[in-house]
Amino acid sequence: GAVVSQHPSWVICKSGTSVKIECRSLDFQATTMFWYRQFPKQSLMLMATSNEGSKATYEQGVEKDKFLINHASLTLSTLTVTSAHPEDSSFYICSPSGGADTQYFGPGTRLTVL
Amino acid sequence: QKEVEQNSGPLSVPEGAIASLNCTYSDRGSQSFFWYRQYSGKSPELIMFIYSNGDKEDGRFTAQLNKASQYVSLLIRDSQPSDSATYLCAVNMGGGYSTLTFGKGTMLLVSP
Image (cartoon, rainbow over the protein chains, first blue to last red):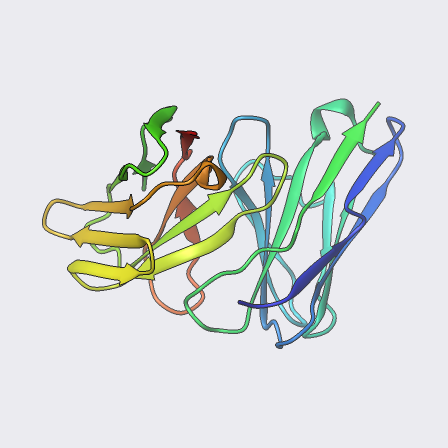
């Protein structure tokens, strides 16, 4: 399978701060990046889809001004949670796609907002 | 609304038994189907995918697809305690860059 890294793997922050999560595809070019989040005992929920060099498309109910996505290169995408609040505490997972039907996932970032 | 349904479980089987995990989906036009395994606190890892009706085998795993019944299953033979995890069914309801719709997952517990 594809090699995907995410950084940081976990982060604890105070309410009101911003957190940036990086996702890198290490062995292929990710023309499309999917960002998911997963609350405890829930399934993966797609937050947004971005194509390299274009603005991200957000799913209904996901605030684009709160979850800033940058997909500036074919190997790197970032998700910034701005002014994080406790309800944003979740497991954030990226999934880069090189165009093939199969999706692989990054190892995830666990965010805890105090 | 496009949906993927799975029994949340837990499904408990003894070591060495066959575990059968089931999934139904609502969109008859769905084209490809995936099974992921997710250990607690970890991200999903792909087990296998299937596109055509029938069975597809990979080691101890067999995926079964019945598009007429909108049903896909995963059989795990000779279950091991290390197979204990949540199994996510995902359906791609279009080609190319179309996104996956995930079920909520079935927790499998394999007892020694």
